[in-house]
Amino acid sequence: MKSTLNTVLGCVLFLSVFLVCGAGCADSGQWSIGTKIGTLGVGGELTKRIATDINTRIGFNMLDYSFDEDIAGIEYDFDLSLRSYSALVDWHIFDNPFRITGGILSMDNEFDLDTLSDQNVTIGDNTYTPAQVGRLSGKVDLKGMAPYIGIGWGNLIGRGRRWGFYTDLGVAFVDSPDVVLRANGTMAADPAFQADLAKEAKDIQEDLDDLEVYPVLSVGLFFRF
Image (cartoon, rainbow, N blue to C red; front, side):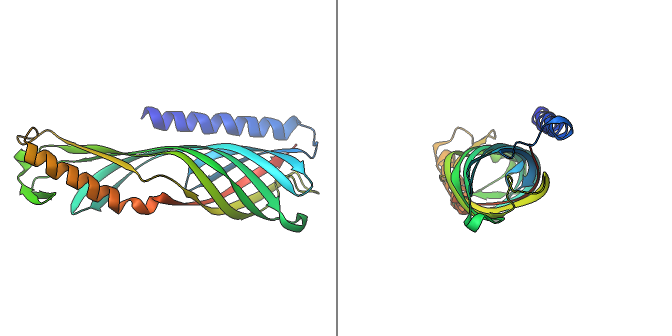
């Protein structure tokens, strides 16, 4: 709940700055501020022109989301917390709206997972009763600096208009996720059970390895000042 509130407050603050600037900032033709939504969450960016066809962007993104997912035969409840910061360079080929973008994302993403089954479950190489497992919970961390490359449409420092829409499509190359699992049932302290739990965590990590190439898709609205 606290993370969700922080997300809302952050977006409200950014939107307030966006609207205030839209109402009173003079157009220098060198800066723009934008708000966007996409696979990294919701957030905003500040853009500066550094050459005729090259802009730089810094920004942040955040999102809190819950969902259910079956991984390695076990149904988990996931609480997703996305946080990232970006430093990007846009090259507008032939000074038109199409651009090639490269840069770095600093990602701080967490997946809290939890399940309490009323049926026998297979963990690692063995099957356990609900009493033996108890509550199975854990965390998946997807963090670190991630190189980014992509394409997009929309020149945030374009000529002739102060408002506009823009899009991004690309990929971020992140480290393999770290997975930790815990259980509080009657077998929680058993070494063989702990070995199976470690194997289960490894299976989850392998299922999530596709996230090493993280898709980035977003649409946004910018104001130039």
